[in-house]
Image 1 (cartoon, rainbow, N blue to C red):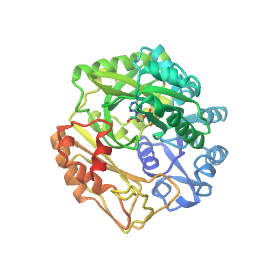
Image 2 (image 1 turned 90 degrees about the vertical axis):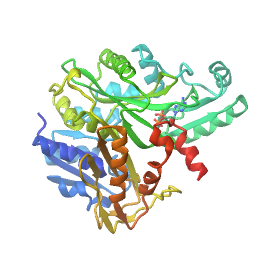
Image 3 (image 1 turned 135 degrees about the vertical axis):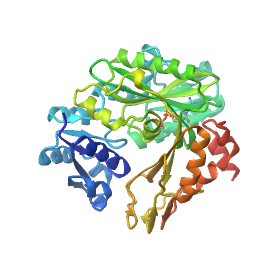
Length: 445
Ligand code: ADP
């Protein structure tokens, strides 16, 4: 069993991992940049090591510094959280060479799923339905012919894509060359890799993803779905479980398909299979080989601590539950709270003057912020998540509105007001929204 775990991350997720370790009797090591020496994860961890200057490339992405921190502190495992090094197969391999346990899947799965073209091919081979598209990477000369075959509109996507970047839609043939070039440039700049593929652009899908967990004892289970259709610029804003669009039989069917595929490829640990869902059909888009930002909605409806299970699996132990033990109870919704202007979305770093979090039955706040904390300008603008559970969706929405009203964050701009307004929208209340709804709603003002 892991005895001392180094948390290779920052912010709310570093704290989230620390909490699971504490409850398991595992000592924690925080790492931080010079900009984060006052951060909550650093204050709460048993030990902390400064690994570099503010720029993530020199600290949170600095593999030699993190391995050295493990050696200095005697940490026998690393949890990468999400983002940063969480989907870096090279990092997993280096840790293995140093006999340090990586709390994550096997490196070959990180590698395959990190290349979205290879991921789609692997999923087709494992029996998962995918979005129709090019069979592999496209070049500028064959793109038009392949796009015509797929049928317009088509989406140009980066094989290395993530965070909604490197993605451009072409509504008709005349727009293809430009969309491809723009997406290619964006991918080159963001990922240093400009391999592109084409996909049918679905007009009104929902984004529905399935949480899975697998251990090294042959257990592969799914923990239901999360509906992440409320997005801005292809980035999730609010997530819920269960999806208002699925019934029990659709949930069971997709769960079976996914667990069978994961057993077939020999997956280990936590993973999320992302689908677009339109007219009753699922189409795979990508797989994330890590814990996700929105994992708490699944925890709220299943009562299972996903980080704890990740640590058990990484220690070579079996999952603490079987498929038949999982019962989805009630409804959960998560709001991502960003330090951004609620209408312009311009980042708003700076000092938090006053910070009061809501409480009460079914209310969970995952945040590393506190009154007096100064949000550094170097990292992602998400500063916390409010997750609420209710016996049904209606109760959950009422409770969420109440909790949002209690939340006070003074001194910076936040997206709290955006969430307060969203909850009043009739389409949201009815659960009738697709991946485009939020942007078109925001455009109306
Ligand atoms: P990333 O890895 O950058 O997050 P994804 O492939 O997961 O990229 O897609 C992010 C979002 O982009 C999806 O949730 C969806 O809103 C939109 N999207 C992706 N593929 C398609 C598609 N084929 N048709 C319509 N929308 C899509």
